[in-house]
Length: 95
Image (cartoon, rainbow, N blue to C red; front, top):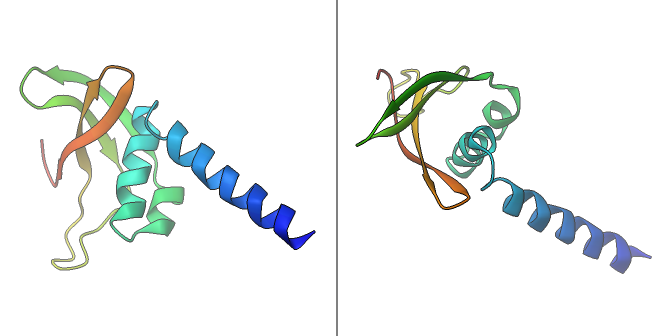
């Protein structure tokens, strides 16, 4: 029984990880999680600002994400799309 639960948990994690590449919001949440901000990854409000720059990508705004080294808020994310996959190209405090 424990083995089945463990296998189900692993499959769920793999499915969520894979799904995070198909949505811009999930790509930002994955970025936050990988940068050791799991609470921010869950609680942040993410907004598409509706702007696209050919060099930088699509501009998004997120709340509740702070840089631990400087204490400054990182609230703007540029995302790029490669095929069906989204990834964070850069993140910073201003566009």
